[in-house]
Length: 219
Image (cartoon, rainbow, N blue to C red; front, side, top):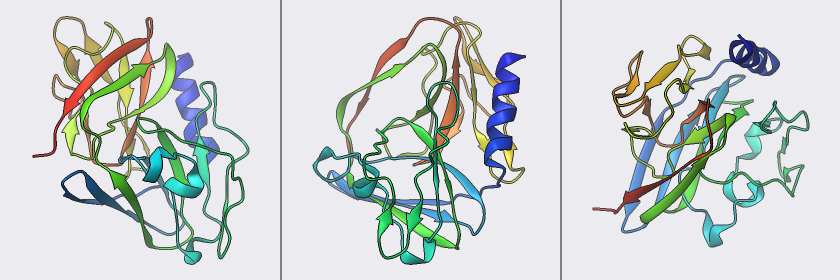
């Protein structure tokens, strides 16, 4: 009940809808991901590439056009959405210059105009580390591929994940983890719900922190 109430409050607090479409292009280890934003709607995204210099400050990692004046970011603090939402000022940039969002983390972005946000950076390769904390957190694939995530062996019995339903403008039905089997429910395979590049999810961790490693190489 507590989890359901928190997610209901999260959706109500933002109070917007979303639509996201991605295209991924890569050459060797450098690439970019395009995400379509629709006017006056919300998208639940993540940073899918390592930004230039590894600098995850939003002034470096999330750059919008002047037409996006008034766009805002909603970041999960671990207990709720940060009320001090950074806002994009056309011709200037983000009004909060000390905010960072690392990869593997989901966040909401509102949009004031139909446009595209382009993430540019290096495609992570090799052994990529994750750590899902206990309780409620956001989670995203750090690799810019469409895949079921995080895998059939990652989770505690009773854990669950939710993705943002962009058409219905609400959280999807929860996908649950069954120990010894994997993820089950909705459109998920045993490896977890399908995540597109730059798409975030919510993770409900009923046990201790879950560290794991993902191995990836650009083909």
